[in-house]
Length: 233
Image (cartoon, rainbow, N blue to C red):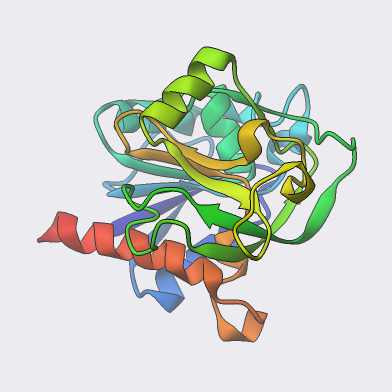
């Protein structure tokens, strides 16, 4: 299984993601430069967090037109696995690979802290190893994390079980008080209708090893590895 991690100008979680895939899990992992148009035969593509192109215009709006994204869009439309984390989630929404948009946090401030997520479904490649309802502690670091979509899209996300994570408290309660950025329906992560494109604002790659003081993010990567092993089998 070969993984590719896209690097844009302003990416700052690219090497964290490479470390998780390559060092922690031992997967062949390559860095894909934004000006290239070849995915180098990768089986899984990761769009990392950061501030691509300085977040000018809108977060992810410029990155969406990078040469590499044409190949990513084609790959995703053919059923390929694509995961976006934080800024990567924003890029995938701008590329219309995921529905909705990410807007300025409700408090208009950058938020960087550990938060809690309630797992809403095990029926996805990034939650397959996580029991539905399980609460994870994962860090966030964003100023534009408010997920917004129209009522029809929100209804479809709920009906099709495309909402992967909701912001909660440590006991799994979901309400306005547990919502750090004002996202509609406390949405923290979603997938597309065909369940091969994934996006989440929290950073599991920052919570994947004991040395970091938090290993809850490893459950998400364990799920991805389970998906990868089933694909190989």
